[in-house]
Image (cartoon, rainbow over all chains, first blue to last red; front, side):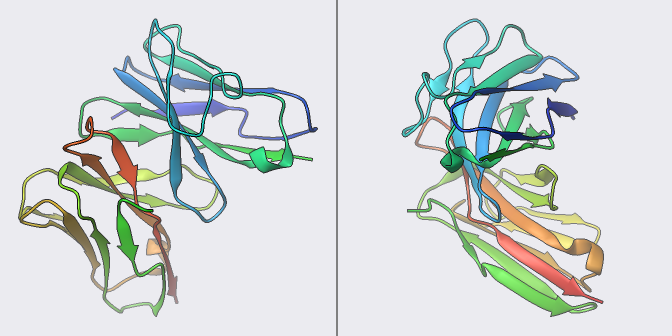
Length: 113
Length: 112
């Protein structure tokens, strides 16, 4: 299994600012992902964080709004840029050890005022 | 449109009752996972099923993968308040780059 930690666990931010969320995995993993989850809702994939290359974004998500870094096999960051209240959500980091198993971090609860 | 349809969306039962949650799709999945998520936490993987017709048991939880690998069910026997949470199914789409897709979830409340 993999243990995933995220920082910060929660934050309250002002409109127009940016927040960078960090994700650390306790072992080297092939795939890392970022999801968004509205309260009480299911998960929406934002992007796949690729090590050594640009992230792969899902439809509706763009690099200018959600820049992602993945400098190595255990760490990734997601930045939520120029935030608006609509960006208030839970952001989840996930890592995959193999094609069938995916683990999640505890999430970052973001509130934009 | 949700690729994976979960039912019911909400379920509230008394402690000791049995329940079944369903996850259905028109797509074929190379594998399917069930997760449980509690408030303020990330989803926790319960089980992965990969073979059509496969049945896996985890204490009071029984998971089944449909023969055609398009559907799955989760059955809980003698539910306990600790089973309360959001249950999510997620499948790897066999014909779409093995992308992981999540259902909308079933929110289960078990009352003592």
